[in-house]
Length: 463
Image (cartoon, rainbow, N blue to C red):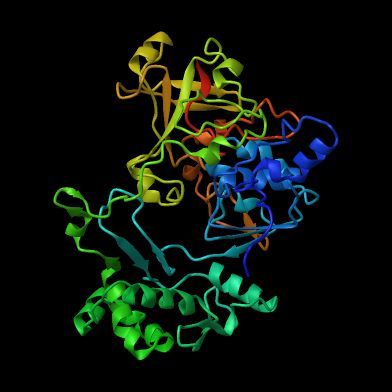
């Protein structure tokens, strides 16, 4: 089965192909502005998925199933725009969250399916960037999952839930004869290992030559001996040793020196650099009707109607800009680790000393940070490494959930830790686009739909 139809995020589709556009043309109206922006050149965005579903544009959803997703913490301004609407079953009848944690978004779900975390699960990924040689990393459960077991003994997880639902719905591609190899042999997909171990086999054999066979020392020293029975039960005999090798190394990695050839990149981009894209230039902005530029061009930060943010929120009234930066100790998902709070109990909120002098602030003073979308109280640090006119907020703190709030399960209070609430989250200060009065729409870039999280207009008050 393949997905078909229009993405609810209005991505990969031109507004001019929509019913809304055709109806306006047929009625003798100008087709612009559309009810909300369209994004013909980008993949689906989480910034648009939920707001589109809750507004019913281009269509409503009957159900939303999320996995390891926390947009109310991670998308600037979304909580203020969408939280109350998500609670309304008339807008979204069913919300199922699959997650290992009760986060700011899953706390609002109708049903929560417990999931495994990274130390309990299978998976593959690749370096995000900065690694010149090719690599694929392989993850396997280093500890037994703490979730309950299904009737057939599998740990409750995203994979177990999806397989069970698919089999109940009689969807193709699941069950005892789900996977077919090039020789026409069929294999089952009834559990997570059926999928991930065969992916590992594909990785082991791809390329000019397969990886080596793991020896007994590889298996015993790395702990792969614990998953060896599952590998032997699932795979063909000639795949077992090579897949064990993959897991004993944590993946498959090209030689380090393959990333460069005579001081040049070994895996270089070989296609020509495209500085003019006629397809982009042929499309129009769904709100303003202006054509997109077919070549690189600079625009000031703009709202949906093309107005510059600084025109809507003048610098005289909003003299500072908010930015966020990644923490060297904390991430959005590690706030549950007490030892990290011992190292840094709250996040850094930094201001240039020149601005500190301008506002009469000393290092450690408490201030109220105000944006068009909200306000928070924070302790200021004065740092020369921050540009004048900027407030820099370290990301990863300021949770409302993730164990920061107490919940009850079957009437029994669950443990919680108020320390997880420490600090502030820049995304609580994001704001809705004021030019879209009839459609609550986050401030975001008009081309890609990325939410505006850097350069938010702000002001501060000393407390």
